Each structure stands twice: as structure tokens, then as C-alpha cells.
Length: 250
Image (cartoon, rainbow, N blue to C red; front, top):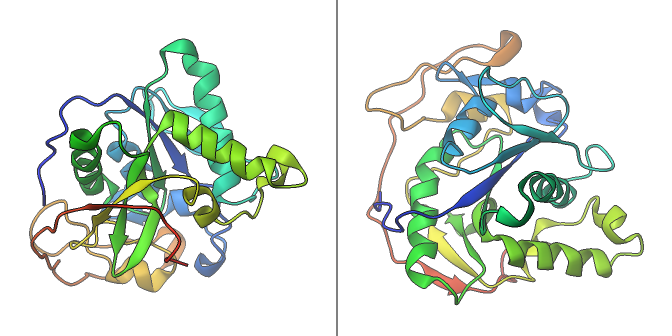
């Protein structure tokens, strides 16, 4: 893994946790446990260096002692773009003029997001001023919800997408994330170690290896799913990241 060479970089964090989880039989993703830790706690750990963190979703169960904001997209289950808008508004209201200039965006179902953060920080740090953010790309697919974005650019992009919808900000429900990212100029960061792998199904959970330490890890599924031990992780050398304006990934 590439080192975190960006140095101090102030950021807030938005954790998107409002999906229906239909392929998990309706079990809320934040409550699913992998390697002894819930997916929400994995995401919160990845955001531990954020100035402020907001969880966007229905009544998340937060760990004691963690100062975390909670927001809800409108309408509920309105999708990640509506969730990002709600989360950013909650952060803006709490931060005022001293808001961090960057926003870490994480889907709650990416348990190795903590390994992604140094890659994202390293990508944006040396290129300050000539891009709007960075996101991972795994197996040729853009992972926009594992990204670090300039706050002003994210707000500008959300406003531009909303302006093109009949309902304005209320029309963001169901808008594809690629529509938002198309408004931004971002750096693509190759994800050779699959740290952006997500949990959409119980099979994903059984297969997924959490790279927190070496060896095999026990995977425990929430609410009665069968535990299993996943395979060893595979790694590949890092490749240089490159600037990109999206449009080719669907």
C-alpha cells in the first residue's frame, strides 16, 4: 500500500448508511458484523481523523463517546446523492465558517475503507489546486463512494445537479452518483488490494477478507447467517494515479 504522504489534511466525513439492503434480506448494513466489528464501526474507524463525521441513515446505533452527527436523506432511501446532500448540509450547519476544506465520502458497506484513506490523502495532497478530489477504481470500476472531495467542489456539484432537476434539491432522490461526479475533475486511484470491496450479499460477507492483520479472519454475519473463514488477501504493487473527468464508467 502506498504511504500516506499528504501530511495533515483537514477533512470532515460523510458515511452513507441509508440503503435498503434488499440483497441482505433487509438486514440493515450498518449492523452487519465482520471480523468482530459492525460495518458502521469499521466506517467510523476509517473516519477517525475527520474534524466532524455525519452518518446519513435511519437511526444508526453509535458507539458511546463518539461525537457523531446524524442526518437523513429526503425522502428516506433517496439514494447516495440525496444522502450526500443531507450529510453535507448537516456538516455545514455544525461547522460554520471553520469547516474543513475536504470531505471524505464512504459507503458504510466497505469494511476496509480505513486502508483506502491513506491512498486518497496521498492522491490529493501533492496536487492541491488542480483537481476536485480523488476516488478509488477497482477492476476498472469507479468507486465514487470511497472518495475524498474538495468541499466547495462537492457543494458546487450538488447544486448543479439539483438545478437540472425539476424539484431542485428535493429532486436529488434516485440521481446516479456518476451525474454528480461528472461535475467534478478528480484523480483516479487504482485499488489493487481491493480495499474498496463492499458487502452487498451474504456471499460477499463470507468471501471478503479484511486486511487488518495477516492470516485468516473469522467472518460473522448478523442475525443468524452462517459464519465462514475467507481466503487470504492478495496484493499487487501500487500504480500511479491519474487525473480524470468521469464519463466512461457506468
